[in-house]
Amino acid sequence: NAGVTQTPKFQVLKTGQSMTLQCAQDMNHNSMYWYRQDPGMGLRLIYYSASEGTTDKGEVPNGYNVSRLNKREFSLRLESAAPSQTSVYFCASSEAPLASTDTQYFGPGTRLTVL
Amino acid sequence: KQEVTQIPAALSVPEGENLVLNCSFTDSAIYNLQWFRQDPGKGLTSLLLIQSSQREQTSGRLNASLDKSSGRSTLYIAASQPGDSATYLCAVDNTGNQFYFGTGTSLTVIP
Image 1: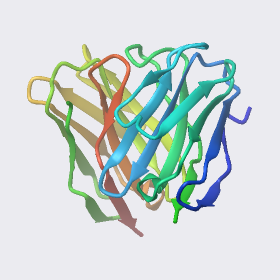
Image 2: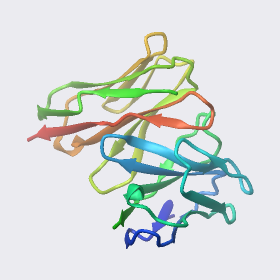
Image 3: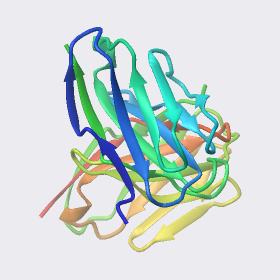
Image 4: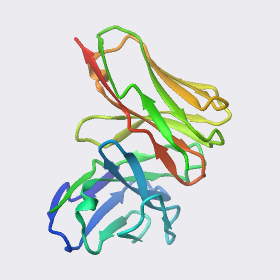
C-alpha cells in the first residue's frame, strides 16, 4: 500500500516549456487535490476533483490544467511554465469531499523550478 | 476569503516541556479544522481533525481544541520529544470543498 505517489520528485524547466505532474493513489479514494506550497504563503489549492469525472478550480488555478484520468490518477499540467510557478506541488486524496469527517492523505511533493 | 494565522512562526523548547501552538481564523463558519505535521522535504501527515460541532480531539500526547466563536484553535503537545521537531500546519475548511492553510509553526525540541 503506497498511499499517494507523485512523479517526478524534482524538475527544472525553462520559461515557456510545458510539463505534466503525475499523481496516483491506491486507497480507492473518491476525491483528489493539487496544492502548491510557497515560502510564507502556506499551501494553496490549485484544483480538486470531488469524484471521478469532475474537476473544479481552487484558489489559484490560473496557468494550470488538470485531468482526472480515472479514480486512481489525477494529473496537473503546466502548458507554458513561468518563473512564478516555481514551487513545491503536493497531491492529496480523501475518501469523501472535505465537508465530511475524512482527512486528506498527502504525497511527498514535486519540487519544480522554472528558470 | 478565509485567512488563517499561526503564531509563533518558530518555537524552540527543551525536551520534556509541554507546549501550545496557536491557530486563528477570520471566518468562524467552518466545517472542520485539521492539524497537520510536515517534516523537512516531506508531505503532510494529518494529526487531528475537529469537526465544527466538537470542542476538542485527543491523540496520544496531542490535544487540539476549537473555539469557533473566537476563531481560534490550539494544539497542545505534552512532554515534548526531539522526534516532535517538525512544522505544524493548521487548515480550515469553511466552504465544504477547500482547505485554507496557515503558514505553520516550525518546532524544534532540543534534547
